[in-house]
Length: 406
Image (cartoon, rainbow, N blue to C red; front, side, top):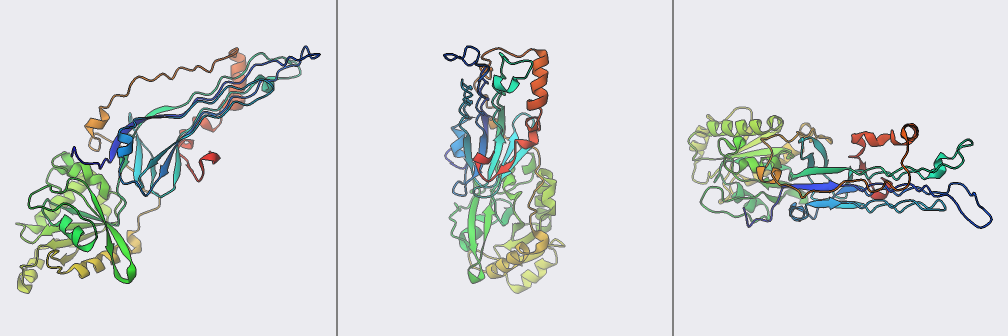
């Protein structure tokens, strides 16, 4: 795995910008000895955005860029000049990326479409200048608001490949061979277990210039949901598949038992996988005659469509594609627009990334220029200004069509 560029799990530190402080400036000019307050507002701190990019297929660009920091807003100035807003930061991720809180494992948001923009962290709002606090009885306020602090959060990004069909089977079941035959993908194929060390995607051509996407993951073994083999690391990639294609070789000792083992591993990893539609393919059938195939049909699992294939001899591949196409396009098998995402727990985490320690960062508020507000004044502007949507964390993870709208 060391030489692989496929990175599907990474931990990074994000920080939105602090809002600039408001100005407490008092106007002074020739012949105007008491011009009154004219302090401007501070600028907004920069946001942190996520943007889907279909040209990316891995998170390797974030593996070596662990810190994503937006800049702070500038302080307000005299003559009611508003400070400059902080610069936003946009993180481009592959489609199918889910984001979790690194500390709690809580699901935050996901990006599933090309060009989709999600605001991950909201920048702090700029403080109001002293002109906002001028009243008939307080004509010369000598205070202004400090900028609102930014948000610092360590997040885990988990890539889940978007495919119509996911291949599930034990090592050497013929998954990579099938993908190489019915698509243009060129996965590594060899006569030993765990030849496939990373997921592979292939576009399968169908009738009338139609197509669907097939994903191959490393082989699953008994106990994969508990960390054995490579299956646990890549089982996340079939969570978004519309159809699961189970592949069991014809020379297996007990086809029904192997199918039950595979189903158990999927259910243990994520119980929602049990609800996905399934198709069973018996592979390596080029040496079987019709009589043997009819005899094997009696011992097949119940309640699942089955097809006998041979990738090398191109046997049953047309029938398999027809069956997969019908299953994918069945309205009952449509993936809902809003998927219920699981939170990260110990079973779904990767220890190497979770143990990554970031360098100490300083979130000290250096915006406290001018005079600070006393307790009564602080309550006044907090009631009027701060207690809006910023405290609602759900507002942070909103989908926007344009970052300038945020």
